[in-house]
Length: 312
Image (cartoon, rainbow, N blue to C red):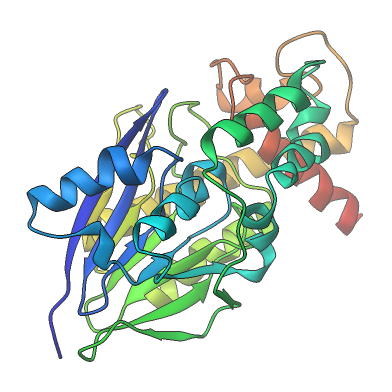
């Protein structure tokens, strides 16, 4: 079996560092693609400096459908001469196929609470600006598949919904390396709050990663933060991975208790930036501005509201 080196590829974007990962297999793969400019402006030069060619990439593995992970997919596919296979979970494929789907997702979730008349237009404009092109994926996955990268190198696909319905982990078999995108949020990234659309699925996926996958190396899409605000890196060893998973579960439990108490008491408009979930922000000590995109506070609160209504 050929050993497959992993090279992190960072792309700047606003307040965020966007991380993709190159798997140096006989059929090279890149996990996640940043935004439209990332492949040409960040990935290609980094690969050239490492003696690799972006044109040789044969697999584009997308962990989920958010714009900062799929935005460069079409551009990267074009740079490979349209030879790379593009892989995404079926549940998130609409976000690769349609820019409009991102604005629709905004309106259906966090946009309900942000009281921003231009929010939907801004979401649509962001999708137009940073998604390099709508496209049909080559391969839809559900979890349980094995992808051959040549030379005996295989990647197994694990469904880990919660952050989005179609979040997946790609595990480099035989190495314990797991690429999870944004599925392990800890205390969040630049907004300082963990973001997930379905809290029940998010918690179950964290437990699955902890108990079944048990990564020896955990690769994250952003440098998520500890409780004290200091960031983890994006390449975590086994001990750091266990800590990040444990901390992610702990903060979800705290937020979940506060959210359920707020929902049981009934939502009330308060006029604050956190309304109608101001009691949750107060209970967990969240004092950052919840409005800047991707607004994980309201994404997660809407997830708890949906779960509460579903289970009531």
